[in-house]
Image 1 (cartoon, rainbow, N blue to C red):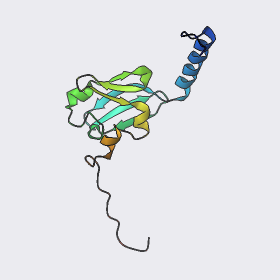
Image 2: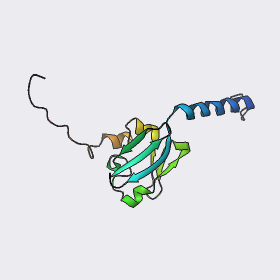
Image 3: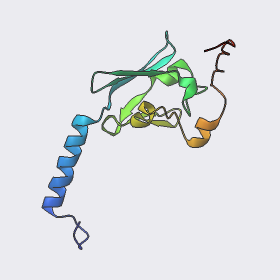
Image 4: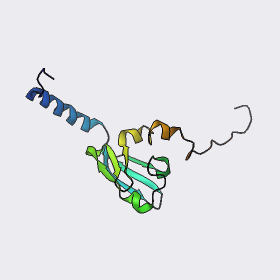
Length: 123
């Protein structure tokens, strides 16, 4: 940006071009819904892939009812999921990276399954 407080037209054009390029290469949520039968939040991505996760893993969704989970909204051009009644927001890029909340939330043991014990042997 220049020394003035307002960006110039070329700077605005460059920023818009960068945003358009990012929208083409970065997957975002096209739709999101709660699948009560599978007990999963299902996110259809703009690249044709599907992301699904159990709400018990996600910060703010742990104790939510199926009706509350069904009220999910896609926001921020597909970069975020929002549940108004729960005051909960999740980042789609974060979910794709396996991040279901803050560092403190991710460090908690709740919701984690113990690893199965492997039998002793040569392998």
